[in-house]
Amino acid sequence: MAQRSVTLEVDSTNRSQIRVAWQSRSVVPSPGLPIFPAYQAHSSIDLTNWVPIGEKLTGSVGGTNRTFSIVRGAGVDEMAFFRIESLIELPEAELIGENLGEADFSGGNLFGAELFAANLHDAKLRGADLSGADLRFAVLTNADLNGASLFAARLVRADLSFAEMTNADLSFANLDGATLFAASLRGADLRFCVLSDADLSFTSLHNAKIDGHTLFDAKWKTVWEIVNQGATDRNLQRADLSFADISEADLRRADLRGADLSAAFAVRTDLSGANLLTANLRFIDLRAAKFDTNTLVNAKTRLIWQIVNEGVSGRDLHGLDLSEAVLAEGNLRSANLTNVNFSQSFLNFADLSGADLTGATLLNADLTSANLTGANLTPANLRGADTTDTDFSAAVFSNTIMPDGSTRSK
Image 1 (cartoon, rainbow, N blue to C red):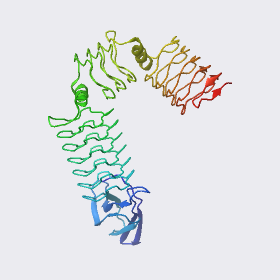
Image 2 (image 1 turned 180 degrees about the horizontal axis):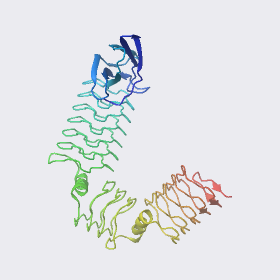
Image 3 (image 1 turned 30 degrees about the horizontal axis):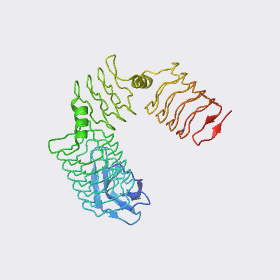
């Protein structure tokens, strides 16, 4: 039974009958196409054993809210519980190009449905059967497809950015040219799946099942191998791992010289003894990553690792280059950051309280939810920075260039 709640009204029509009533609701919120589920009422005397009562009430595509009711015989002293099962039954439904944004199709039957170019942004499709469905060019951004069956579904050029597809069945599915930016395919079945030319940037491939018939670019095959088989002592010189999710991977003693790890998501990755010299490490996310004294890396990247993992509270970092760095959640409290270059760096949720940022450059930096209480911003340059929810309480401004280009002093 899907978790689509209804409000039940229970009253007695006489001493021997109980009337149960509820109002149907579209599973697609306005302004999308109204779709009403089928309903089956159940009763129980112990909340464990449920018995269907009355006929199943069919759903509909289109229409308006309706009130349903059933009448059940009851003894004078009998206790009874009621529940309503909501059922999505839309096999082979023609929904081409329809607006189904934020729809709740959880557990629904959409076998073979025609959903070409449909809008399913933020839709709930957990456990749904979409086997053989036509989802070409469909928008499924941020959709919940965990545990869904997409067996042999057509998803050519579909947009699945940020979609959750943990343990989904994508075997024999065609995702040629699809966008799966930051999607989760953890535990997904990708056997006989076509992922040629698909954008798998930041896609989690952990525990995904593949076979010799899975078609995807060599880059993503390498990423799959790294996160599922480990890469201890592996020669990955000049490998393209840019924008890859290699989190939690075992890269101990791997040779990554000349590799492109720009914007790689390496959270909780073990890089003990790895050789990262000459690698492209712009925007690499090293939160909770493991370095040791044998990890070979440039001084800037080791400092970035220290900031996000150990903190550099009170340290003198005067004049250093920390541009194009992921410093999110880093501890820079009370540090000497005079004339430091933070251009284009991610400092969201970072602690910069009491830090001396005199003359610092923060061009286009992400300061979302950062703590700059009591920080000295004389005359720092924040032009283009994102200061959404940034805490500037008691911060010192003097000829400070603000995000909009204005100058602030106080």
